[in-house]
Length: 117
Image (cartoon, rainbow, N blue to C red):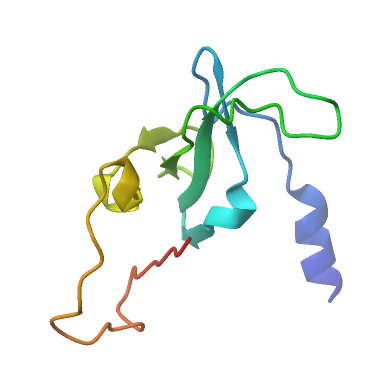
């Protein structure tokens, strides 16, 4: 136990920018999911448009759609790339219509990740 606590005490952190786009913000990663495999980290989030709202509301322009995005780090969170995928969009935003599976999902396949909204 002392060795584990000693290791934890030596871990340091520093803030890094994961997503930045003028007029927008990235939010709600807890609603989209986070996965980690070794030094690879994948985080889902919503890219929304900023609009001033009352302080008890999200500062979001509800007249413009949120867009699902993925942030991926291959170096333990030091650097990030942002990914967009048509497969993450709902059908009313240009995503694919739901369809029946052609084969069973292998939930134990290495690297498997699933997000449902």
